[in-house]
Length: 377
Image (spheres, rainbow, N blue to C red):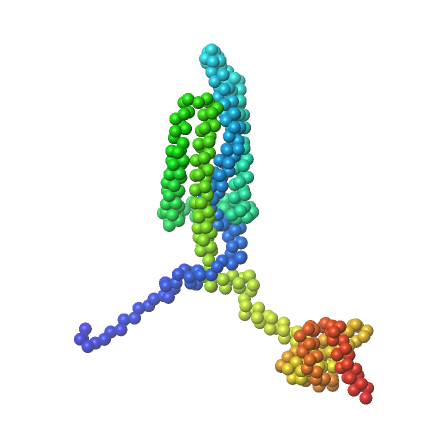
């Protein structure tokens, strides 16, 4: 290469490499109602499972507090029944026990246990439904249950496992467990002296004491969990809104698909206006009079007592259209009357093909009377 020789090196590159995404730019536009509806139909909504769990916990311990004596009495009934059966089992040879007696024993235990858990299941079911309705409203869809090929793709599975969202969920779970352990530990530690009395008090008092300790600790944990759930719901709402955002091009494409191409619609409206004007101009020769501004506005009026109760506006227009109406009136020897206030009121308040309002009867009648007199003379 010679010392003073210059070389130009040209590189080709694609500007699309610098785009934020493949849909026409950065997603900065809020999701449209159509996209939100489609996402909702697919089961994609902003919902916090933590908030559902917090409400379930609150209801669990609230029901436990209300039914603590009911639960305690039924538990004692189970223990009493089992302990009463022990001597009978010891007296009889185990080999002599038949399936009927064993089934009978389990039926009694199952029946009492079902009575214990029934209030918890009932209230838990109700609060689970209400929690979802409060968060996302009522919408039943089976689309999330439908099998999708990408769910069975191991590569996609690994991506979900090691994604940013998975890491956040892991850290959130660890933080949640540590907070709950701390709250549970401090709650039980305050009751340590009472726990050591369990050996010296009757069974019923021991059950009530255990229930009180568990319920108090449970309520504190539930309140902490509720705060976590509310924060998580706010985060899920923000995350959902960010994920639903659209690019400007996506918004334009959706508008074209739903409302039609604006240019095409504009041309259609223009053709409709032109057709309407042609029909309107065809009616000008039928008019009795054209009231003008004098050059800015023009309104063609006709009165036929046999077909209408009041004069009717056959045509109206401003500027260029007003000029065309005046020209048509001259060609067909229609009287043109200059009345600026009346022309403005008719143009602003009466549509083509409509009768004039009663408040304009007098003014229009005077103009028509003048025109009829001019024709008769």
